[in-house]
Image: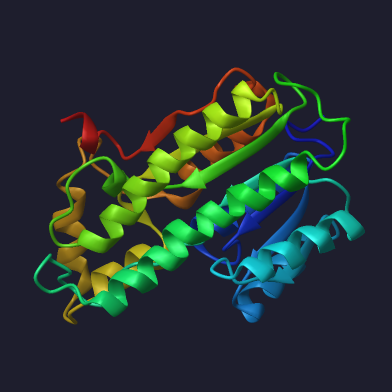
Length: 265
């Protein structure tokens, strides 16, 4: 029996990178999966690759109506969701996003996806998970929300001010949602995951900012990691799977850091 056997799971931004790896691990461990992705090409391709236990729904995390539509479709076609992975996120579009160089349009764009998208996910995710009175109140069998933050939500990020602020907000929001759900006896846990330097499409995009050969940039980044190598998407996905599963039945409001030791220095 899989670790999330028979559970209904939603992964936003599940078409690529960490989201795709998390979607894969959830299906491997028995979940019925919905990939909620703005990019119809990558979202549908991921669902097709994962087979009969995965479906794709086009979704814009910034839009409240899109969240309402998503949760209604999931309830209608699959039933009450058990797991929500708020993974969708964006980075800066320029190589240096210092305080002085950050424009309001870029600030707002990053907060809209990375903060407002997670807020809306938590709001409508909790509502969907408690839509009937059968939800077990805590412990094994309860609902689980996992929010994707970053090590940038734990340490200063002077060249990525807007991104770092957004991920710090996700960390704090996670704790507030966790305590709210616990005190109300809703049977829903909420935790955040904080990746460090991970080999993904997003990581490659960071190294491509400003042009030039990305190899020296990767090498410089890896030198920051005490464990001596960049993480892989599956390393983060395995942590997401743990928090989504009943193995983490007594874990809520925590940040799980996956950074090879960077923030321990």
